[in-house]
Structures are given as C-alpha cells and as structure tokens.
Length: 262
Image (cartoon, rainbow, N blue to C red; front, side, top):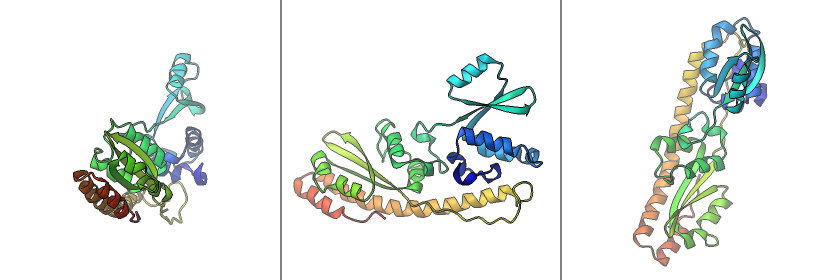
C-alpha cells in the first residue's frame, strides 16, 4: 500500500493506487473508529467510482460463485449483521472513454497507447478534445504523419523520439503512417498540512476536495497549453509535407522536427 495509506487519507487521485485487499483492510480498520458513521458517506463517494462493493453471506454458494466469475475478490467481514463477507472489484480501464483526470496519472504510456489503438483506428486527432486534454495532463504528446520509409529511416522521427524517452504507436494510413508518441510528465506531489487527527477533527473534507480540484484544473491548463503549442507547430509542418509529398520536403521536415518537446 503506497505510503501506508489509511482510509482517511483517500482522495479521488490516490484511490487508484490501492488494491482490493488493501481497501478491505482499510475498511476493517476504519470501522473501528468512533467517527466512522459520520464519515462513511464521504469515504464511499471516493471509493465507489473506482471499486464495486457487495456485502453477502458466504453460505450463499450461488452468489459467491457468480461474484468470483465476475472477478470479485471475497473477504470475510465480521459484524456486518446478516452478512459475513464483502466482495470487492476494482474497475478496469478498458476503453479510451474510461480515462479520467484521476486515473490517467496511474497509467503507463504503453497502456494509454493501447487504448488509443483500440479506439476504432481514429488515431490522435480523432479523439475527443476532452480525452486529449486528459491524456495531455499526464503525458507529453507528439503526433505526426509521414510516408513509411521516412518514418522508419535511420535517425528519423521514430528513432529521435525513442531516444528522447517517448513510447510510440504506429497506425497505418495507406502508404503513410501516423505516429503517436507519449512520454510521462514528471509527477508533482502537493504538500498538505494538517495538525488534526485522522477522524473527526480535520477541517471540512469538502473544502479540501474543492481546493484539490482547483489545483488540478490550474495544472492541467498550464500543461495543455504548452503541449498544444508544440502540437500546432508540428501539425503545420506536416500539412506542408502532405501537400507536397516529395523526398526534399520529407527530408526537410525531419530537419525541422528536431525541436525539444519540453
């Protein structure tokens, strides 16, 4: 469990870093505190967008079997009234529209590129702008379309981007290739100060959530604007090549493209 998180430490961002087993342990420990009843709704508002939770009786073999087939982990939970077990399942990020500002930071570049590849071949420019902004909040993004021989030649765009630490996705476009390049941005950890105890004494959680959201929005706007300017410059260069797809233009594009991405 990252940094030995307690249930009172959970936020919309770090909830994605824990497993089903870790969440179950958090719930067990959290319910021992006197302030649980007052804060349970707050915790569940953070947990349920990321985890499915079902309370059940272990003696109900049919339900146990069904939940196990649906990839739930089942744990014993004493003192739950008629229920003596809990089934927990973490949501999977299976498609591009599952991406959010909270979960994008916990994915690898290869995982995001795999989601783009599965998205009906739309490539980068075919993604909704909201999804582009989400990806751009956590990754440096570069995209280009070139003839296959130009994209793959020694010292060409793919080689240079890989040397710069980018992961690459190639999408065929006839005799051309769309190259999508992602590199993770450095993570900035926000420092929070609190002199109160975990349960019941901290300042209002809703105020903290709103402050977090404002910080995330400001960070996302700054990151998106810098990435968009880089994308616009490369898009202009690529349009010129597509209008005149001859060897001289392609070679000149590769020379022009040797700019820094950060």
